[in-house]
Image (cartoon, rainbow, N blue to C red; front, side):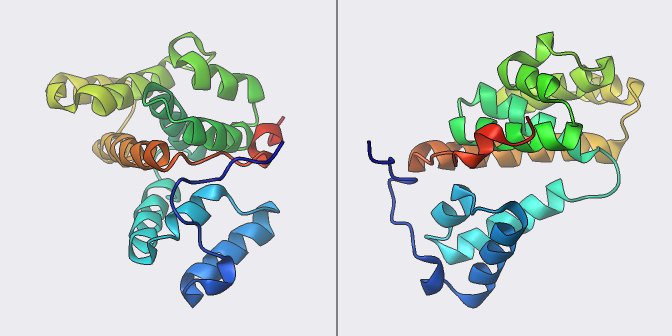
Length: 189
């Protein structure tokens, strides 16, 4: 059986990409042992690739506030709600690695409300899901609930921004028919 295409849009060869994008992809390949398909798919539009990953990095690579595992929980839970196979699989793998707990990562990927997570994390994901599906309903009570669980205003912003950013990412992944790399399925298990 032939492997399905990773995108319904053209996927450029790494050697044909602008130097900065090529270098970023090669660094990721060196670190992970493979090139995640999101990099190749989005490289089809170099300016948008740069903007996407600049915002991604600003949200996901912060040292303060939410933990890296909590950030990944948000991506996995909201991507499930948005039916984004690529992000659930890829970020589920990253969550398994960051949380050092494959069980919780898989639980969050299926139904965070039944996952073995803390009440604080459940409040975080409840808020993220509301932002993802009904941001127009978010009010002061939602922020107060987060604060009651120890989240700061900056944390609330980050939860909302991650949910919103990955809503866009989920839609692009679905429209492009982006395929998860096979390597993601075994990561962190």
